[in-house]
Amino acid sequence: RVLFRSKSLKRQGFCCAMTGDGVNDAPAIKEADIGIAMGVTGTEVAKGASDMILLDDHFNNIVTAVEKGRVIYSNIQKFVCYLISTSWVQIIVTLVCIAIGLPAPLYPLQILFIHLSKPALALTAEPGDSNIMDKKPRPTGRAVIHGSKLAAIVTHTVALTAAMFVTFVLGLYLSTGKVLLQDIVAKTDGLYVCDVYQIQGEWVRVRNTSCVIEGLNTARTMAFICVSFAELLRAFTIRSFQLPFYDRFFANRPMCAGVLVSLGLTLLLLFLPDAQYVFKLTNLNWHMWLIAVSGSLFTACFDETIKMKLRRRYRSSKNWQAVHEGFQLMLTEMKGLRIHMLELEKRLEHEKRQARKDRVKLV
Image (tube, rainbow, N blue to C red; front, side, top):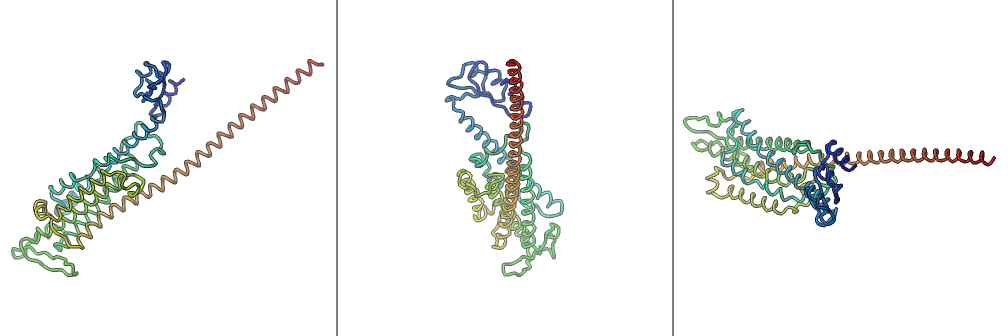
C-alpha cells in the first residue's frame, strides 16, 4: 500500500519522500525520490535502500532539511537572475547606440570592471525569506527561471537599459552639445567644436582638439556610474523576489561587505587620478552626478515597485486560496455529515426490521 502511494505521488509530478525503519518499508524507500531511514531503530535493509539516514530519528530534522534545500534553491535562482539581468544591459545599450549612430557607451576595460566587481557570490549566503516554508512545493519538471523570476529579469533589464541609455545621451548632450557621432567628430577649420553646459545654466562653446575626447569620457563616466551603482543596488533588491529590500537588511553580512568593497573600488576609480587615466574616466559636476545616480535609483525603485505588485498579488491569491480551502473543507464536512446521516438511516431501518422480526416471534 505504501509502495502504491509512492508511485502515485511520482506519477502526479511530486517529489516524493518516504520514511521507514523495517524490512517491509525497503521497497517504498527505494521507489521514492528521497528514501529516509531511521538511524536508531532502522534495519540494515532499510538503511541500504535509503538515500538519507536520520541519525537521531527526529522527524523535525526532515522539515529543517526541506527548509535548507528551499533556501539553497532560492539562492541559486537569485544568483542566476542577478547575473542575467545585469549582464545583458551593456550589450543591448552598446548595440542600440551603434545601430542609431551614437558612440559606444563604455570602454571594454570599464565593462570588465563592472562585471568583476559584482557581489554576486554573496547571494549564496542569503538566509532565505521568512515565508519560504509557506510556499507550495514546486513541480519537479519546472525550470529554474520561470514565471515571476523571468519577469524580474526582463523588467530590470528594460529599466536599467533605459536608464543607462538616457544617462549616456544626456551626458553627450551636456558635454558636447550633440548626440550623433558624426556630428560630434565634425571639424570646423580643423578644430572640434563642443557646446558645454555649465553649472550656472549657460552654454559655452569650446574649440580645440581635445573637447570631443573629454566630452565622450564625461558621458561614458556618467553611464559607468549609472550602471555600477544600479548593479550594487540590484544586489539588495534581488535578495527577495517578493519582500522589500529593507526586510532583514543586515541578515546577509557577506552581501553588505561585498557591496561596500565594490562601492569603495568604484569610488577609487572615479576619484583617483591614475585610475581615471587607466579607465578613461573623468571628474563630473554635481548635476552630472545627480543625473547618473538618479538613473540608478530609478532602476531600484522600479524593481521595488514590481515586487510590491507581486506581494499584493500573492496576498490576494493567498486569501482566495484560504477561501477556497475553507469552502472545500465545508463541502467535505457536509459530505461526511451526509454519509453519517445515511448510515444512521440504515441503522434505524435495520433496527426497525429487527424489532418487527422480534414481534413476529413473540406472536
